[in-house]
Image (cartoon, rainbow, N blue to C red; front, side, top):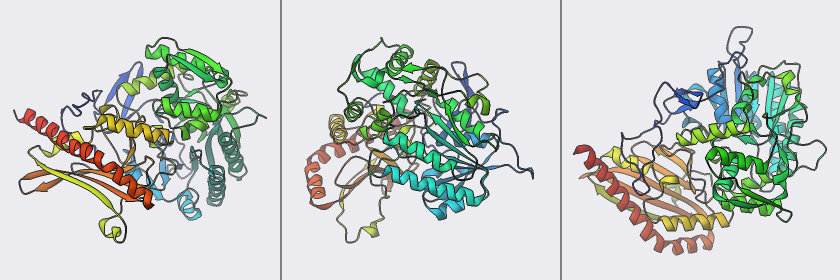
Length: 556
């Protein structure tokens, strides 16, 4: 597992001001309002539910051994929060992931079993479901690309067969809250279909149907947050008048943990939701109150289609239109619980369900102290290249375009590394901020992620983290940070920031690598060369100057 390599008290991003916040990695407990945060490791804190509550702890097997849970989607927003709570609750946890390396970068990686493979692969599922008591299915498509429904269906069928063959005692699936008998969006319809497939597996299954999930880092919360922060007055689609029953992420986690201990004779879909039923406009203004903002004026217009609304959301918020669209489409109908059957099957949280404004307050508190457990940006971007940078021998016979710059420095390694790992997000970029912003806007307009998604935490990075238009592909503390581009480009691109030994001390080394696709890729690289000269040389100069200043301050 990769360690969090930070350097003392350096001021890490002088081109945009200090990152601030409460440093991570301090053992013990702290208070967020009246909510206790318990340190799970040196790199994360978790809040309620902890998994140790009497109603949520695992029940041992007949032989006295701890039960085993398999989590599909452990690197996602919900799955990444569920795993540490299962561990605290006494479960043995196994995860299935396409990238074992990405799992190993997570703070709980050394306490779980990792099976590398695809959720639709029968062989990988057979290995993953062996000797499993409870399977959590938290995998679903959040892109607007073609074929997502077929993909979800294939995975659900494969999971159902594997769970049945392995004798899994219980499947728990997180689906979507929806009105009965209504025309559903493609994504909601796919969620319903997946639930039906799992219910037909012969394995006792609980399908928990949740609506808008509110928590730090959730895509739905980020939509509400940024629309309210940015727009004092908002022309909005008619769905802002629809009724919604949001639920706090802590209550979703409570129900997931409780479902693992539910009566094995129960196999059905149940609605889950918070105590408040609101209109979307009321959710925005409820957020405004908690954020200390004036109330927002909202005008419902009949002309904004889901497609136009998602494009609008994509421009105004960090959530790209490809992810915003299924969220917007799910709001076309009222999303309210049909009944409270859940109360007869699963216990409520000890302190009761979380009201909407309290959920917002908790989310803002986690953001303020820079301790967002998981985020929607942890999900991979659809259609972005996912293969790692090939090693140099693999480049033979391929067109590879490289911009490499290096410079020796008197700065110490910790100072250089601190500056490297603070780039992007609210910290900004060391050089050419306006050009980075322009490039991000161009990517956003073409349907890409742009710069607005920022980074999950201001104070540290881990493999798999999103960083503006990049994703952390490799992180070797004190030596190398490799970023893979997720912007829309005609090819595959990487940016490496590293530290090497030199005859006179240390050298900062920066390398941009581009594998062009066709003529358009080569023309793209040529068009970027003038900007590379300004941006990349400026990055080298600024990073070195900042690191040397830090070193001088510490030695003076």
